[in-house]
Length: 584
Image 1 (tube, helix red, strand yellow):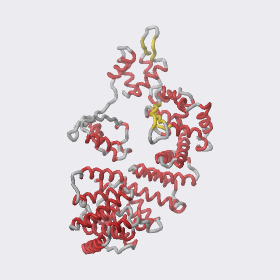
Image 2 (cartoon, rainbow, N blue to C red):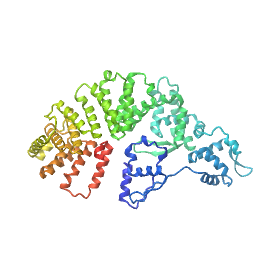
Image 3 (tube, rainbow, N blue to C red):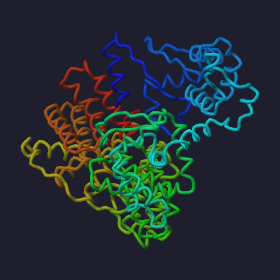
Image 4 (cartoon, helix red, strand yellow):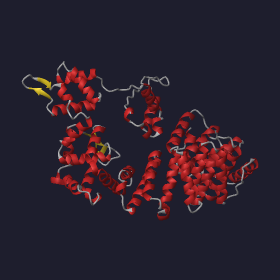
């Protein structure tokens, strides 16, 4: 959303200068959602970074300026100004060799030299001096991670303990949450953890506020106070550099899994108390994923698997499909090979969600194999709906439309909710067109509004299949199939009630009616399709509905001046919801 806002600002405010920074070199491109790197504001930046040159894009002064590590010369300039000496070139070369020009490491390295007495201010000579460079070169503390670790070790014990916990929570942490965690550490930790009582005592010892406990780390530049965040509970702190977090995390040692389990249980409890904060659920799941070996009890494994399932649901709504798949795979490993017999409902839910997430993530072979496994173990036809749908969608995405149509037609006939031919032809499409037109003309706008929402899950699945069959028939020019499945969806919705998958059928119906010059019905049905898209909160379906409606029915009655903005909006909704076909 931030990138979209900036993109919008650059188009509407041509005199606005925007300067942004991103650490492309230290970010694994494969772990970042593709829709982020594919955004216009970052796509060229990454390309330019790889090419190591400056490009102009779309006639705009949009440039990527790679900021490389400092060389010996600017390091020497920094030392000259800092130490007030001119003969610093040899020292600058040594600093560059040890730090590779990283400014954070340069500061830490100089602090280490000063703390160990190798860099000092001479009262006698009234200037900064340093030991022989050959002696400094032989120092054991040459690894910058070890330097930072030593800096942390010199902090007070209570501050070290808090930083160790914070390092397991990520790059930043919430002060109020940290205080609650420390106060209740023993409640959430394993009974065998040796440090649970110590943690609980130091957070409340002598009533010292947590801000005071953390102050030495802030003063030494290891932590930074960020202030409050609308999504947080209180003031936020962050590690000043990822090397600081890594060093603090190394100090946790063998207790790392125990820490993650304790923090995971804590965030799970906090989410249950603050259900509006979905990030707490995702945090809990992330920590559980780091300590699965500590879950020896099958009952607790099942509970953690449920948390991972709920977290994956949240991640899927945020288009984080790969992360969703990762958590769900761990959830399946926790349930075990006997999950279908011992925990059928949870196993089915996890399998369905992972198949859908793998499909959206483009993992076609995996989602097909997962679907076939669901079809093997699922007990009823309704419970096999998701597997059939994912299998069909994967075939559609690989342009194997005929194979997908065969599976879809077979499934629709098995459901026995309406008469479905073995092969859709012209006469089937014409018959459906005539009967649908007659039905629409017999109903008033008030009648449309009086039709209730469908509560029958079987009908909802039926409409979803009809929707997918229609939308994938359109791009490959299967006109009769497109007409038949779209209009059948309309008839089922008018008879059985509306569902989230009804709106694309009505938009397609409006499309067909407009092409036949039935303009009155075209307008009525088109408006109804948009009303239904707004009524049901389903971005995936809404993108499809809007695409069909704005392609043909809308321009018949409205000016097309703003069509580019409307299709840009549809593109964003489509990609964010995983509807790759509509987005493309």
